[in-house]
Length: 248
Length: 256
Ligand SMILES: Nc1ncnc2c1ncn2[C@@H]1O[C@H](COP(=O)(O)OP(=O)(O)OP(=O)(O)O)[C@@H](O)[C@H]1O
Ligand SMILES: [Mg+2]
Image (cartoon, rainbow over all chains, first blue to last red; front, top):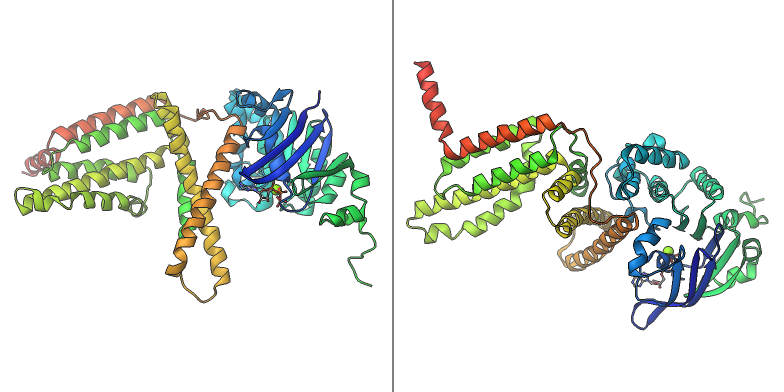
């Protein structure tokens, strides 16, 4: 069975303005799938559906083997992690340590295990040295890493990431990419950072105005300049070899 | 420091408080006792109320809480009680009695607000919520309390961002012109409600069910008990005995 199964889903925030039309998407266990598309294409909306953040959709959605319905949400959310596009939406405790520990504590892990888990996750995102830093004193990129850490601390089987590399400097961006590639969890990544998608996802789905335009191998999709241009995107930077950064 | 920054800092200081060895439940019980005692004073008993201020004073010194900061935070309580009490001089038996009863009302309001302020400074918001849960305070109300508190952070942060954005685009003007207030406030509410909603969603995604589990802090049961008992006795004494008069008499005796 697929880890995420979205079948013929329509969704609108307000009546009469459909944001997603007839979306179908299957993500098999252990795969990583990229979602690309212009601003407002519906990437964030699509990513919120499997964790039950939006209700009132038409069609069927299953995540981690269960239908996304109110009565299953607690179990689904234990297995499916979701990283918000805006880290300020996610981090709300005073210090980094506290925020990463929030999830494990809610699930009643003993404190010793919580501590271990937090330190392990902070090491993965290379932020151990910031563990007592107050979150409101952190930079944008640090917050982004922190929000990823706070989701990883629950050991999700499936992880949905909305713009994971936004606001990251090249070094931290590389860290995240390495980390993502080292993860065996099922991943769905929505991003404008096509280089990131190219580095981390085997398959990619192209969304435009709430519909799936096509789905295919990442290398094929992202090397098709006509296709990308038709949907307001450009080739990944690493493919734009011809255009030198140093003129002349 | 600019105002929004200061507010954010204050909120986060409240977050970080606690870990002083005294269990939040003990602090909460003492505060409730204190508020009940203050509220139960008669409306002309200003001398007795003045004695109750000792509690505030001692705790401020003990916890190193700036009295100025505290006054800055409790002035809404002052305004509110002043508004309620303003009719007293008119309707009470005599004008001076009315003025006195208005003054005691205001002092009562401020003392209670100060006690609540000190409580949060003492314990921090989360330990406080978990103490309320121990007292079987309904989950829903605690979540509301917590969210209001979170909402405050979101609100302040949005104010800060919007003010900065506004200033950058209007060099040379000072403050916010009156005509833009309407749209500013409207947008602000929408934005901060959105943000608070997302924060709540993210809490739910991470297994939050309304119980705020306390990280087993360094609370000492002995100190907590001592704290509760001593303050219990002190508040009782301040409430039922004219402590100041007795002290004065005692002092005179010793001096003689
Ligand atoms: N809370 C909301 N209420 C109403 N409409 C919304 C809401 N959130 C998003 N939309 C609309 O839904 C559409 C899709 O938004 P979504 O955030 O999913 O796009 P996106 O692909 O993630 O864009 P971006 O790349 O800018 O993050 C947009 O047209 C947006 O205006
Ligand atoms: Mg988005």
